[in-house]
Image (cartoon, rainbow over all chains, first blue to last red; front, top):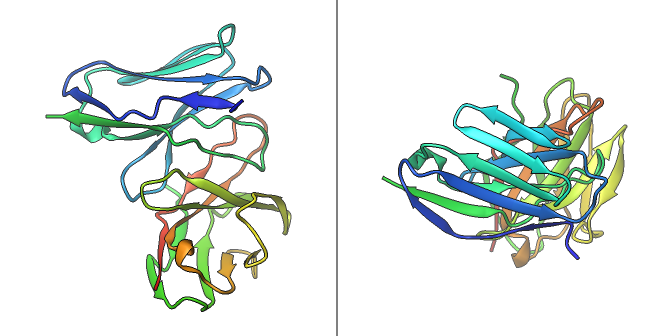
Length: 110
Length: 115
Protein backbone atom coordinates (compact mmCIF):
# COMPACT_ATOMS: atom_id res chain seq x y z
CA UNK A 1 0.00 0.00 0.00
CA UNK A 2 1.37 3.41 -0.94
CA UNK A 3 1.87 5.79 1.95
CA UNK A 4 0.10 8.59 0.13
CA UNK A 5 -2.44 8.34 -2.65
CA UNK A 6 -3.26 11.29 -4.83
CA UNK A 7 -5.47 11.64 -7.86
CA UNK A 8 -3.05 12.53 -10.68
CA UNK A 9 -5.66 14.43 -12.63
CA UNK A 10 -5.28 16.33 -14.84
CA UNK A 11 -7.79 18.73 -13.37
CA UNK A 12 -8.99 21.63 -15.48
CA UNK A 13 -11.14 24.42 -14.07
CA UNK A 14 -12.25 27.88 -15.21
CA UNK A 15 -10.72 30.94 -13.64
CA UNK A 16 -12.46 31.87 -10.41
CA UNK A 17 -13.47 28.32 -9.54
CA UNK A 18 -12.90 26.75 -6.16
CA UNK A 19 -10.43 23.91 -6.47
CA UNK A 20 -10.22 20.94 -4.14
CA UNK A 21 -7.10 18.78 -4.21
CA UNK A 22 -6.99 15.68 -2.05
CA UNK A 23 -4.64 13.06 -0.70
CA UNK A 24 -5.14 10.04 1.50
CA UNK A 25 -2.40 8.54 3.60
CA UNK A 26 -1.93 5.27 5.40
CA UNK A 27 0.61 5.93 8.16
CA UNK A 28 -1.08 7.34 11.25
CA UNK A 29 2.35 8.39 12.58
CA UNK A 30 2.59 11.30 10.15
CA UNK A 31 2.27 14.59 11.94
CA UNK A 32 3.23 17.18 9.34
CA UNK A 33 1.28 17.43 6.14
CA UNK A 34 2.85 19.41 3.37
CA UNK A 35 1.66 20.85 0.12
CA UNK A 36 4.22 21.68 -2.52
CA UNK A 37 3.57 23.32 -5.86
CA UNK A 38 5.65 22.66 -8.94
CA UNK A 39 5.45 24.83 -12.01
CA UNK A 40 6.52 23.32 -15.29
CA UNK A 41 10.32 22.96 -15.54
CA UNK A 42 10.84 24.38 -12.04
CA UNK A 43 11.67 22.83 -8.69
CA UNK A 44 8.89 22.16 -6.18
CA UNK A 45 8.22 24.93 -3.70
CA UNK A 46 6.48 24.68 -0.35
CA UNK A 47 3.02 26.14 -0.44
CA UNK A 48 1.99 25.46 3.13
CA UNK A 49 1.92 22.79 5.77
CA UNK A 50 -0.21 21.83 8.73
CA UNK A 51 0.58 20.08 11.94
CA UNK A 52 -1.77 17.34 13.07
CA UNK A 53 -5.47 17.92 12.42
CA UNK A 54 -7.31 21.07 11.55
CA UNK A 55 -7.26 23.86 9.03
CA UNK A 56 -4.68 26.40 8.02
CA UNK A 57 -5.44 29.33 5.79
CA UNK A 58 -3.05 31.45 3.77
CA UNK A 59 -4.70 33.90 1.43
CA UNK A 60 -6.68 31.99 -1.16
CA UNK A 61 -5.30 28.65 0.04
CA UNK A 62 -6.65 26.48 2.82
CA UNK A 63 -5.07 23.21 3.93
CA UNK A 64 -7.20 20.79 5.87
CA UNK A 65 -6.25 17.60 7.68
CA UNK A 66 -8.64 14.97 8.98
CA UNK A 67 -6.51 12.49 10.90
CA UNK A 68 -9.47 10.28 11.75
CA UNK A 69 -10.01 9.52 8.08
CA UNK A 70 -6.36 10.06 7.04
CA UNK A 71 -7.47 12.60 4.48
CA UNK A 72 -5.76 15.85 3.55
CA UNK A 73 -7.10 18.57 1.29
CA UNK A 74 -5.96 21.77 -0.29
CA UNK A 75 -8.61 24.27 -1.31
CA UNK A 76 -7.90 27.13 -3.68
CA UNK A 77 -10.46 29.91 -3.76
CA UNK A 78 -10.89 32.24 -6.72
CA UNK A 79 -8.42 30.18 -8.74
CA UNK A 80 -6.16 32.04 -11.14
CA UNK A 81 -4.31 30.93 -14.28
CA UNK A 82 -1.11 31.42 -12.25
CA UNK A 83 -2.26 28.55 -10.01
CA UNK A 84 -1.77 26.17 -12.94
CA UNK A 85 0.85 23.75 -11.66
CA UNK A 86 1.31 20.30 -10.21
CA UNK A 87 0.42 20.02 -6.53
CA UNK A 88 2.25 17.50 -4.36
CA UNK A 89 1.53 16.18 -0.87
CA UNK A 90 4.67 14.34 0.27
CA UNK A 91 4.48 12.55 3.59
CA UNK A 92 7.03 13.62 6.14
CA UNK A 93 8.62 10.46 7.50
CA UNK A 94 11.96 11.66 8.76
CA UNK A 95 14.58 14.27 8.00
CA UNK A 96 16.40 12.20 5.49
CA UNK A 97 13.88 10.62 3.18
CA UNK A 98 11.40 12.98 1.58
CA UNK A 99 9.65 11.37 -1.38
CA UNK A 100 7.15 12.90 -3.72
CA UNK A 101 4.33 11.23 -5.54
CA UNK A 102 3.20 12.14 -9.02
CA UNK A 103 1.02 14.97 -7.75
CA UNK A 104 -2.15 16.42 -9.26
CA UNK A 105 -1.77 18.55 -12.36
CA UNK A 106 -4.07 21.56 -12.26
CA UNK A 107 -4.90 23.87 -15.16
CA UNK A 108 -6.88 27.02 -14.54
CA UNK A 109 -8.27 28.37 -17.80
CA UNK A 110 -8.79 32.12 -18.25
CA UNK B 1 15.17 35.52 0.32
CA UNK B 2 17.84 32.80 0.57
CA UNK B 3 17.93 30.42 -2.34
CA UNK B 4 19.55 27.22 -3.51
CA UNK B 5 21.75 27.78 -6.53
CA UNK B 6 22.46 25.10 -9.12
CA UNK B 7 24.95 25.01 -11.97
CA UNK B 8 24.96 24.38 -14.85
CA UNK B 9 21.40 25.11 -15.83
CA UNK B 10 21.76 22.82 -18.83
CA UNK B 11 24.45 20.34 -19.76
CA UNK B 12 24.70 18.21 -22.85
CA UNK B 13 27.06 15.25 -22.72
CA UNK B 14 27.92 12.13 -24.63
CA UNK B 15 26.97 8.71 -23.30
CA UNK B 16 29.73 7.30 -21.11
CA UNK B 17 31.07 10.68 -20.03
CA UNK B 18 31.30 11.83 -16.43
CA UNK B 19 29.13 14.71 -15.29
CA UNK B 20 29.28 16.81 -12.15
CA UNK B 21 26.29 18.86 -11.13
CA UNK B 22 26.85 21.56 -8.56
CA UNK B 23 24.67 23.04 -5.87
CA UNK B 24 25.11 25.77 -3.30
CA UNK B 25 22.58 25.11 -0.53
CA UNK B 26 21.25 27.77 1.80
CA UNK B 27 24.07 28.64 4.16
CA UNK B 28 22.59 27.62 7.51
CA UNK B 29 20.95 24.44 6.22
CA UNK B 30 22.21 21.10 7.42
CA UNK B 31 20.41 18.57 5.23
CA UNK B 32 21.01 18.27 1.51
CA UNK B 33 19.19 16.31 -1.15
CA UNK B 34 19.34 15.40 -4.78
CA UNK B 35 16.26 14.55 -6.81
CA UNK B 36 15.75 13.89 -10.46
CA UNK B 37 12.75 14.31 -12.71
CA UNK B 38 12.55 12.64 -16.07
CA UNK B 39 10.43 14.67 -18.46
CA UNK B 40 6.74 14.16 -17.76
CA UNK B 41 7.35 12.02 -14.70
CA UNK B 42 7.38 12.55 -10.95
CA UNK B 43 10.18 13.99 -8.85
CA UNK B 44 12.28 11.03 -7.69
CA UNK B 45 14.38 10.99 -4.54
CA UNK B 46 18.02 10.08 -5.11
CA UNK B 47 19.94 10.77 -1.93
CA UNK B 48 20.08 12.77 1.26
CA UNK B 49 23.24 13.96 2.97
CA UNK B 50 23.83 15.06 6.52
CA UNK B 51 26.90 15.58 8.64
CA UNK B 52 29.20 14.87 5.69
CA UNK B 53 27.75 11.50 4.87
CA UNK B 54 24.90 9.91 2.98
CA UNK B 55 21.97 9.39 5.30
CA UNK B 56 19.47 7.83 2.89
CA UNK B 57 19.57 6.77 -0.72
CA UNK B 58 17.06 5.33 -3.12
CA UNK B 59 17.33 2.31 -5.34
CA UNK B 60 18.09 4.68 -8.23
CA UNK B 61 21.28 5.87 -6.55
CA UNK B 62 23.57 3.08 -7.67
CA UNK B 63 27.34 2.90 -7.96
CA UNK B 64 27.48 5.29 -10.88
CA UNK B 65 26.29 8.12 -8.64
CA UNK B 66 28.22 9.83 -5.88
CA UNK B 67 27.78 12.96 -3.81
CA UNK B 68 30.28 15.16 -2.12
CA UNK B 69 30.49 18.29 -0.09
CA UNK B 70 34.00 19.37 -1.07
CA UNK B 71 33.97 22.58 0.95
CA UNK B 72 31.69 24.49 3.26
CA UNK B 73 29.34 25.68 0.56
CA UNK B 74 29.14 23.31 -2.41
CA UNK B 75 27.26 20.04 -2.71
CA UNK B 76 27.89 18.02 -5.84
CA UNK B 77 26.34 15.08 -7.65
CA UNK B 78 28.63 13.08 -9.88
CA UNK B 79 27.45 10.64 -12.50
CA UNK B 80 30.42 8.52 -13.48
CA UNK B 81 29.44 7.09 -16.83
CA UNK B 82 26.27 8.64 -18.15
CA UNK B 83 23.59 6.64 -19.90
CA UNK B 84 20.81 7.83 -22.16
CA UNK B 85 18.29 7.22 -19.40
CA UNK B 86 20.12 9.65 -17.12
CA UNK B 87 18.67 12.47 -19.20
CA UNK B 88 16.52 14.37 -16.74
CA UNK B 89 16.22 17.49 -14.64
CA UNK B 90 18.25 17.20 -11.45
CA UNK B 91 17.14 19.20 -8.45
CA UNK B 92 19.15 19.98 -5.38
CA UNK B 93 17.35 20.85 -2.15
CA UNK B 94 18.32 21.76 1.38
CA UNK B 95 16.60 22.09 4.72
CA UNK B 96 17.48 23.23 8.19
CA UNK B 97 15.28 20.68 9.92
CA UNK B 98 15.28 21.61 13.53
CA UNK B 99 12.24 20.38 15.33
CA UNK B 100 9.06 20.26 13.35
CA UNK B 101 8.27 20.23 9.68
CA UNK B 102 11.10 19.43 7.29
CA UNK B 103 10.72 22.17 4.71
CA UNK B 104 12.83 21.66 1.63
CA UNK B 105 13.99 24.56 -0.50
CA UNK B 106 14.71 23.50 -4.07
CA UNK B 107 17.03 24.96 -6.63
CA UNK B 108 15.96 25.75 -10.18
CA UNK B 109 17.44 22.50 -11.43
CA UNK B 110 20.11 21.35 -13.86
CA UNK B 111 18.89 19.84 -17.08
CA UNK B 112 21.09 16.98 -18.24
CA UNK B 113 20.85 15.74 -21.79
CA UNK B 114 22.78 12.58 -22.64
CA UNK B 115 23.30 11.91 -26.33
